[in-house]
Picture (spheres, rainbow, N blue to C red):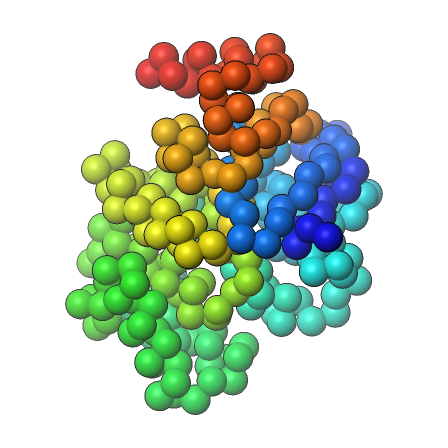
Length: 243
């Protein structure tokens, strides 16, 4: 059984149908990259998996349980972490406290245990020297690495990344992608919405191309990037590679 099963999911906002009968699986330890043009439904799909949006029909199951039947949403989210494109750090807290607060409130960890975990994860992403810094003093790449460390502090089974490099200056992109690649090498289960095609081709076990709210094509990174079958996939890839 797949760790995440998405079946016939539909989601609309008023008249706009954003997701139209989406189905796919994610296996444990797998890295799945969602690619496609802006507005194709990729980020909405992630938000549905993290219960930030309710689906209109279909099912999403994690560990064999339909997530719309989960009553403890915070308990679910500690297991399914999410890293946002705009970092979502608490501006009034330093880096260390940003990484400790959810541990203490949600996991009920003791202060010293939360601190130890925070420092361990900040070291992992190369941000241990910035524990007393506030978000306003950090670069975009540094903020995103702190956001990743904060998510890892909860020891999630699954990590969702919503365009983690889209708000970064080009020179900052590599430092964040290298952290995500390390997680991939450690077999962390991840779904990554990304516009970084070279990165997706390198780290993804599976690539899903979405267009206009549907899955147009899915397959291995090698298949999608080297031998796409769908005409719309070919058009998209030829366009993004032109830049």
